[in-house]
Length: 146
Picture (cartoon, helix red, strand yellow):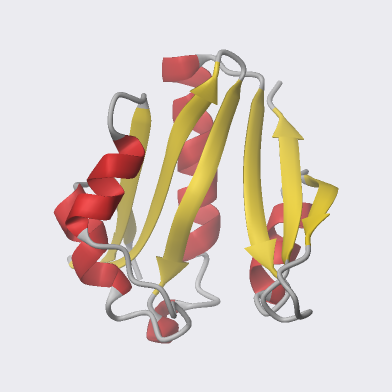
């Protein structure tokens, strides 16, 4: 299996997220574009053997912070290292192109694999966002880049 990562577009993300069963809220091209408007941002697309299978979107929120906003891997390509490859590429890009000190991300309790990935990559828990029930509540993570 060969994973390749490239910079992608809002259109790529809008199309691929429709294939992610856990996403109850699908973002339109317009809503994604509005979120990224006038910000330094990065859209990464991961492909396996030429098929787009995952994405990761983030943007700069301040002089020293980058927010990793949304990302997902198609169910049939999970546990193959695709999410790790995207996370590593995003961190490298932020260090090189933006030079920020921190990456911040949120994950829901219902995604324990994502939370484990973050912890295993040096992200630390720095808060909790109570959304009324434990499944949809969010754990806040932050990582200081070296």
